[in-house]
Image 1 (cartoon, rainbow, N blue to C red):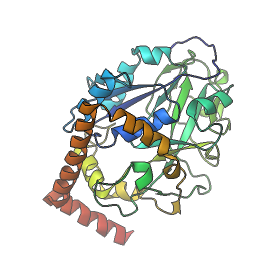
Image 2 (cartoon, rainbow, N blue to C red):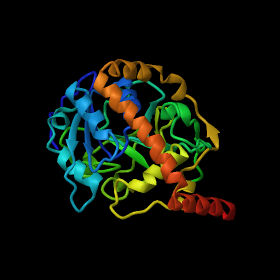
Image 3 (cartoon, rainbow, N blue to C red):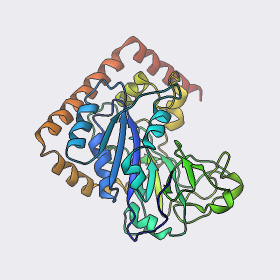
Length: 330
């Protein structure tokens, strides 16, 4: 990937993402990132059964996103989308590129509360990794809940165990030092010694890990920003997710262990929930578009009905029973 190395005072940030059957959640996610200063979105979809595609076509029509139908290769939906995204004009023109999913909400805890503001403070960085903080289900059953960051406010402990690795997503400067995007991190086009890779708080990551498996442990940079990961959302929303499979894997199924891994509710963190008003204002403005409002409401109905259907199905009941038995034996 190439772009000039000039550094503007207010960097332009593009998010690249993939979606499948995310219709009930799209607007809250898009509007959150717009509220923290993200300027552009390139969204790839494939095989949607809900109104996801229609919502994104409406947003594409009014210039909020660039929507593309993903031609999925053997590498899977997500990695295929990242390959196609390399050709996108919005990506080529961006100062910074961030790959993020629809269940990941970046929470800025410093600077001016915006992503461009934080990145401007990391003026020497070529890449900035934002570490997951996993938010659990907290007993929410149906899909008719408020915006995800307002409905789910319990998370794993802010402080990790000794040497505990946590996953992350990475914003990288479009300066020619990276060959291509990856799901969690970009891949280098230059020697590691030429790359300044930081966490959100400015902590440098070790150069000897930049070409291989990159581990984030000990310090997570949460004082500056954290990537809230709502992998489960509601029980019914999770059953919808299980039905459609995982974004990065054609054949990978979601088992009870996945639920327990991501059902982290040890601590309350309401910071994003209590500062979501700006996102909701943007959402209301967008919903003045009659077609968008219609498809958004259709998506909410679809997810409620689909969740109930999945829950009362034989497969859903068997999964919930297995999940409960797994919890008791843990």
